[in-house]
Image (cartoon, rainbow, N blue to C red; front, side, top):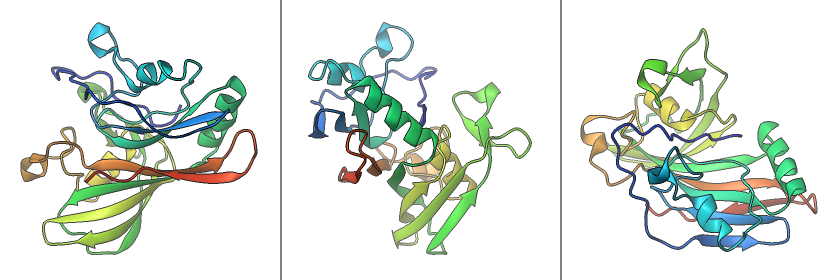
Length: 224
């Protein structure tokens, strides 16, 4: 699965938002959902981490099947399958990098360039799980394209286009640039933590519909 999320939360107390599931689209094969920040995509370990997006969604769509995940603190668009065939098709597209993903983020500081690419391998930082880190010897390939939307001396709004789906890829890559995502409790520090949430939102997904084969794009408006 792509976009694996953190479920080893240490001393963090899980308080998922009490909001209804926002369904953006559904048909015979797929359901498109806008995940709120603070809600797990799938259940974690133990009853305290049982509440999650897929369990809420299955109350409305009992046949909903997992295709990919978003981090706990990331909001935005997700696709779920309603048939096994759709799940297989979508899973193959994610694994084969056929799904185009766009994120919006607010970064600490001002990026000087307007566009760029981060090509740095990532692997879990075992002594500090669930943190990941750049490791040129054992890391797995990870590539992120980025484009500035606007900037001022204290922060930069960017669109991020990951070409791979490593755990915490966008968060680690932005930290490696020297501009961590605002509100990132794992990779930012100082004034960058003075935000109510991680300022990272999955804005759009583009993929081939598993039944029709037609390429379609779906968008979830950024809440920040």
